[in-house]
Length: 380
View 1 (spheres, rainbow, N blue to C red):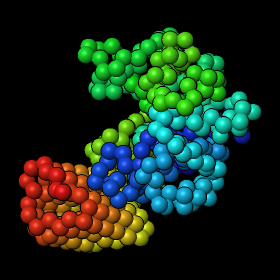
View 2 (cartoon, rainbow, N blue to C red; view 1 turned 90 degrees about the vertical axis):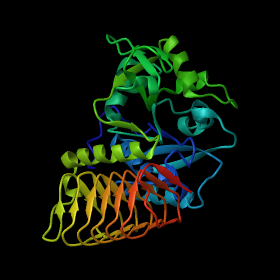
View 3 (cartoon, one colour; view 1 turned 180 degrees about the vertical axis):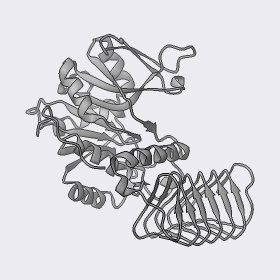
């Protein structure tokens, strides 16, 4: 998406922190082949979208906090490639022991503050969160109220699933948090996106495991935590269903901010709604594609195929006259002729034979399916 103009409040000393809790995440079987930060989302890695949003906010340096377990073999190369592509200085802070979300920040304190010489506020983004990222507005709100922290909140129809944030509507100040309330307290929840002043490092014990669930209530009690309400979309990637919902929201934003990134109908196939197609993908005659469809690099879609609310990751292939709905096809997976795949997620290199029904299937990598799956099932 095109980068908005840099606001005057952002200066070159401001940095950002990207918090990666783990590399596998909860999007299995997709993350069995690719770590969560590098998983493709709308034909870019998840981490690319987050870093692009930080760059658009005027940030030029990002500290990436991650554990030392299960670090992908190609992680360093991927970070170097992203740094060059985006023009960002990316530095990794690797925890030697699990430190919790706030503890990971403390571990990166020297990198964020330049060994105590940089007192500029900094942005913090959780790697399992996607949203419309109003980071410039969040920064400006933080500088205006002058408290130690500003938390991005959103309204949820099911706030008890996340725990709620209780806000003084007059001032925006956060009074307290309630974890999974049984009765209605508030419909605001924590988006996992923050702006902090370096003073918060004094609140985090060194060499200890400290979570944001400990740090934030203490800041609220001390009247040092403000909020800003998000007006755009937000999703926490807790499941493949949340991933698919985020795709639809992202494509809808692209329709208004970057319409050239979306596909249009041709003489050979019809596009309905918002659809993103990689230039290297091929689509056969008579296909109907959309809405909310992403077709990745080197994908092959044969003639007469119907695609709706689905993502095809790199190298996936769909044979003629198949129907794919509300599903994700993993890297290099293939669907046979006349198949109907609905509400399913396929891992890498899964092969589905001809004329089969898959309804609610979750299939681990490297499997060959030769039978129908009529009700939700995990194929191991």
